[in-house]
Length: 383
Image 1: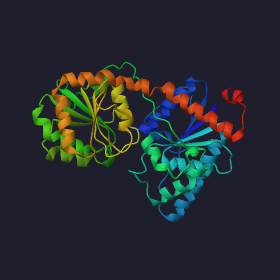
Image 2: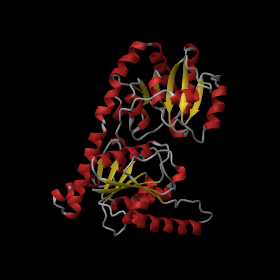
Image 3: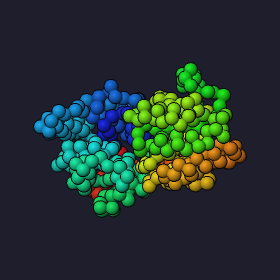
């Protein structure tokens, strides 16, 4: 099949990583794959695998007034429609809410099969009234609205079940890593002689790093041989750095920034903690487990409970409960036996959510929709 993926950009987020993984998997399975981004290449963090065609439109810009905003959006719709149709796709697969809406609207009356993927939980996160309204109006015109977890899918109960599907994100076993990434930041405040607790994600309110700092502050004095490393960047960096200093965590907590390949860090760590207020299906959590890390995660409305088998390969704690998170971190940091037991089963996440299994689910959904839409012969679809 000829499959076109649409995403706003190839930033360093989880959804963008999923696009790269799916693109590579589809290419490996013999499909033709094009990735269209609304932004240009200057925003890229991830690189696409060999064989994937890239179309970077560079059509996103700020508007100074409502009239320019209307013009810019109309221009984007026209350019996006032209770009997608030029790839002659059998399937169009869009990712992330605003891009999903633009893709659906741009392809009105094109008769192309359009799939949109939701990577956030609408019950916990809003894009604003206008985008919420546009989603309500446009999503019924998609052939399928695919959610990355059952928790996310629940938010779309206003759509017919026949319009919805759940397909999880894949987790892959990382390739063997060398120590280059570690060496690159050892000249900072990171202490290689200490045990590392690692957290990872954009420095945004959603990720709850303020909760993590508050919890760690309660127990850091009990574990002088441990250090908390937070990987990522974002708008709250200055605020979180100030909070770190006010809590007396200087030297005990290090904001490392974005690491191109975090797997070497994860494999060197002893514990992974996710303190998010809300998630959909967090890639960082699954990838930490793939590296064999024992994990602690807040039990968000959606996501972590569908990844972690509580008490088997990780521990769930109540969301936004600083004391519970602190107690659980203290418990695991104090007991190597429990950490080892959890880490033994953690890598099974790559079997439960294998790339092969996830790609098969996507292919089966593509074939089902093509059969419904065009009454294609199954042999024609497979070929």
